[in-house]
Length: 546
Ligand code: HEM
Image 1: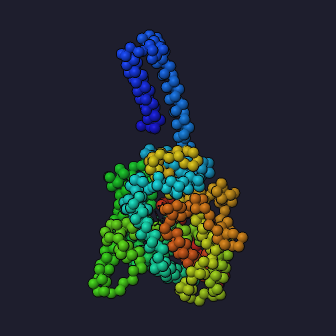
Image 2: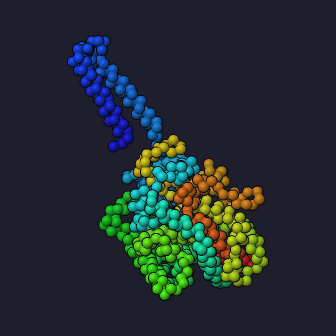
């Protein structure tokens, strides 16, 4: 029943009760023989009685319609800008479609058969749902049901105590020096491997798909940090690892498809189409991950028996220390970290190189800054240069930090992020959200809004992040939403920046990148993360040779 109909029935019941009460009192008064004294009107006169009833009905009607009008005024809903069919028809260019709508309406609704969908790019609304009334906007059962098959009960899919518990342990682990130092060593080693491949391509004038290389390299990095295992997808020596990575990517795309496919549950039940493919891919992912977990548990058990010292640097080992060893729980936690750490960083690095190819002046400025911050007149050995890249030097690279952030503003790795409204509410713009509504903030659309970034919103301008002394200045996180904001802000933000800065500093210090085909249209593939469709094909040149 709609809330308006509910109100109507409540008021009718109320009016009826009043009339009944009125009638009861009248009878009492007659019975007491005090009717005429108590009431100056003659109730035995049916005409008067009918007139009174009419009067009450009229007053009740007026009261009722005033209340309805007031309710309508109170519960105004955001304009409807389209339906889920428009989303399906625009699936390939979904973020363009949503950006065009955001330019028309800061917050709008798309009609869907099963729920009300609200999309906002209004920073005030974003702050409200992500922070001010955080407890009322969660993943909800809706997101949980869509994501559960791939991400289980991991931090991305749950709310409440389940979320709080994982957030607490993970935040602690992510802030430890052990994990920080371990991950930096891993990043430096992996970028040196990547630089060798780029160097070979440069020597032989071959083009390469940088996105593919970043995906492999960041997968190797997060795998090492998460499991303590060398996956080596970069050199392709591990066939099973390759299979896992492909299955994980396809699972991610097929999971996102559920958001626009109203028939996914039926398809899953019948095990057909996209759902059958998702099931197959998740099986590949699970087999691979469970094997790793069992190996690690055995390794730890053996090390205890042998009293051998085992380095407790990776996330899995650290979780095994503080939580139980239920493989399903560990699978969920680790897979969530992998999806968080692999695709987001690789996609962001790819868009970053793309932006630098489109803006060679920015590429040169970044390279000059790296050279100055590292005081490296010449790089003879990439691995040595990477290994010597200190935290201090990275901290001095404000322009690089700004250029990466500017890339994330225009190409946020998570382009749309949906929450569920858990109880009826009114947003700061005065419009209402109802319990069960989906409400999404849109980093992709927000990064392109003139009302947030000014008339040059669509321009790539790292300088907008720098003060007059060239120091990086963070923006309001409810405007720059690439990492989300509030209590659920990205847990790996610092980790991601460190990896992106280490990778960029090494690659840009050693090479110049150019698009292999300037005329080829570069756009995204619609999936959970914003990947470049078909990869990023570039040529690299040794910097000292240019
Ligand atoms: C450029 C890189 C990255 C971007 C743009 C990014 C962005 C985001 C965003 C938008 C969210 C919110 C998603 C949601 O609503 O569930 C998020 C959450 C999260 N991110 Fe990142 N992320 C990045 C890298 C990483 C890395 C490298 C890690 C860890 C290795 C990480 C770990 C997490 C975790 C654990 C959460 C869940 C936080 C929670 O729900 O409490 N992220 N990230």
